[in-house]
Image: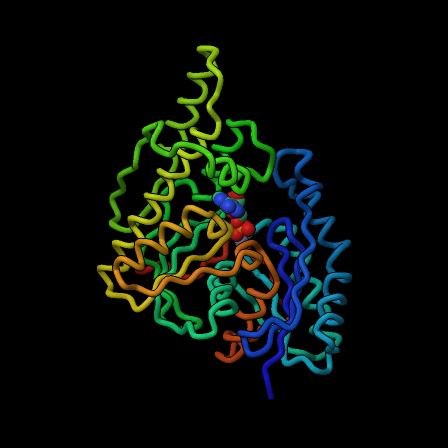
Length: 339
Ligand code: KG4
Ligand code: ZN
């Protein structure tokens, strides 16, 4: 009997549900993006996000079941993102799935959002198995994890200030690119000169830690200085120089960790894994080192329900079950701090 899981993701601005078989096969994946609602305000408005999730979650869940051609009776368990994320948005999903668990009798499995992002790689690469190193770069994370098993992770390094996605979004904002800025900056950078502007590469105490706030501030100062001097902004060159520097920093530490730990593979995960240069550069460096490189297919880089269902499947197999008192946890950790 296959393990069939229906999962719901509502941590930020996507209401997404999916049915996944054995953690690997996507039977359906429905993503309702609220992007247009938030674009008006230049960023995610938490209250609007929560309300939109409430309105969409029943519909998205129904559609995921319908597209998979299954009913609740065919399912093994339910999965839901417990955290981290916006508390109101998370609560909507957790309440919805607790209600469904209570009424159907199906067990509920809570999932860490980043565990989901890592599992997007299992949905894309059937041959991929732990252990491997994973660079997680999203709006809230820039972390290097050793994926020791399907549900066991060791944190090697993380950002000491801004996340990579956050830095991309802020840089896009000073270039007056519309929300969401990261993908727009990436697109613009494709036609720019990455070496035109030299930007600082931050130093960190931790060997595998990241820091992006200095780079972000230097970029903002560079752009403001040009504006004050009344110069026309060479936006494509600015975007390309920023992207080049950030990607080099991300790639350099990831490759250092990969070499030091002699890993059998390197995977990329999180929203920033959609970045074209980051994908190209890591593929190139891994190929030079003879390390297999894995990245989710583009639709699975952004938030989706399938990645949560995959993670829920592995946690289900590990015996994880949520009580009906389960609460959303906006600052949930994937790995408990040492000591
Ligand atoms: O994983 P995600 O969808 O949400 C979080 O869990 O945070 O990541 C969203 C982040 C945003 O900061 C967005 O700008 C960034 O990922 N992002 C990108 C690209 N696509 C999404 N950043 C750079 N280049 C992209 N192509
Ligand atoms: Zn995410």
